[in-house]
Image 1 (cartoon, rainbow, N blue to C red):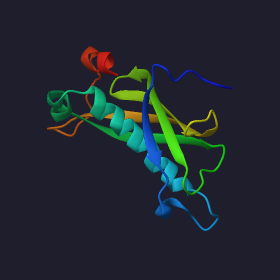
Image 2 (cartoon, rainbow, N blue to C red):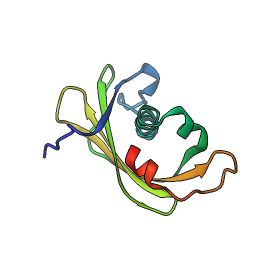
Image 3 (tube, rainbow, N blue to C red):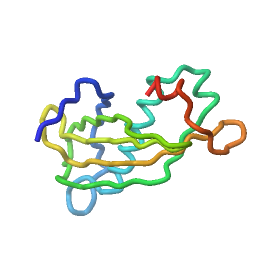
Length: 133
């Protein structure tokens, strides 16, 4: 089932030799790294510097479905968007596709927690951040 990615942030990722495991495809742990990289790139893209200095995000939960293996020399396109938020928590989705195709390799639903960068304590998500994301 094809999904529209027109309004979603995307990041291109190249499979590196060190990403390949003994089975000859990308190790599952690498997908977790990619989910974090795509999410962090989205935040870096949308948040002005003064906001990045005020807030940090930490991951509370990853739920990943591995659907098809990424192979050596693949180019991956990661898409991300946010879902519901409550208090200091925000739901984020990431889909990883084989570049240039509609072949979904993995999908993730993650929970992130907003922290105050000075106190390192959870911080309620305010409208200014909702508007950015």
